[in-house]
Length: 465
Image (cartoon, rainbow, N blue to C red; front, side):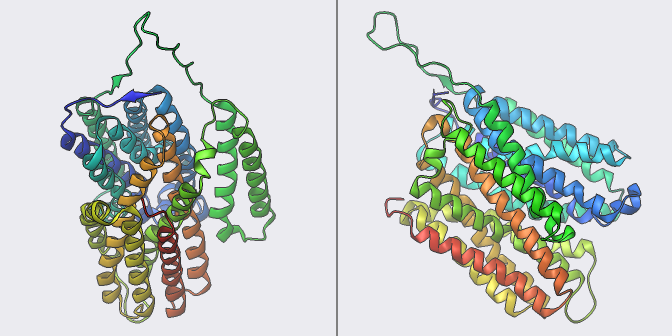
């Protein structure tokens, strides 16, 4: 679907609305994290069943993100963005009114579609903006992925501490409805590509691309199986037949999907572009950036509630301590754009991930002093914000205009895969070394190694980026 930019569009209101939509989408997914401990008692379910409320959201997000990106390229990015926001609002309502476990799972699955809001927002912005305006806008929209995660945990803990936990989801439904209205009213539709006049000598119009249904099914099944193995490996055991079978089946399905995508006429994902050396480096760096982003969200609340020495803090306090890092992510978005404009995107990405690696290294050495860890989270947030602000700019630079939606969806999926792997690894580390300096140190060391690896990959990008 080829379009041209709308002339004379005021981009600031568009960026503000798209960033708000991205923030609402990610916040909706993170709201449940502080409430997981209450679900078994509230719904009369086991702790493992409660954890599925997070797993189903993650799996739905993994499927929705690349699929919605391709649909957006075919049907219109604003249209698919609105669909995802409506699904998020409806899913939030189901979670709020659902006094039963099945309704909660259904609502969380619909909330998982909100993961597509950020890449869709960047793609929609690329239709109406260019140059510096696109660069800065995409940086802010992308940074909401980290900001929304931290804010969701903090806000949910605060609201649940003073009122019923279902109020959290009513609030999410209202915010999603407002974001939907904002997108409908503020984000313009791109001008259609000009149609050649009869007798102008222009060739016939290109045939309309079709949606790759087979590729969609294969990718969905493969991702679901692999992510189930990753997220449940810590509970079932990594050598459990269920874990091994799920991982093997998922990898086999993804192999078949890869074979299909390389041979079909209109693939769900343009693999030729995705494995191009420069794009491959960006995607690998995105996986490691996802690890770096999620490490602090997972480790800091546990460290504050179960410190190595001294009494622990409440869930509310632990959640609020994530706010400074989230604010640092927001402030880092324009800083990342400034560095891109002056030194290039590869240096902005490398510097951001290096900042996070430094912050995690200091955190690993100061786990006995939680106050120091909270202070250093500002440096971690600054680095994550810079790196997340830079990644969509690199994707847009390396992608054809009519494939920006699918490419941004794939890039967001890479960050989500990194977050999923991070969750499994940190869960295993903290379970093996409960409330010990060694466990927390290893967890933060894992984040430092991932961020440092991403920085090294960024340095290897071509100089012209």
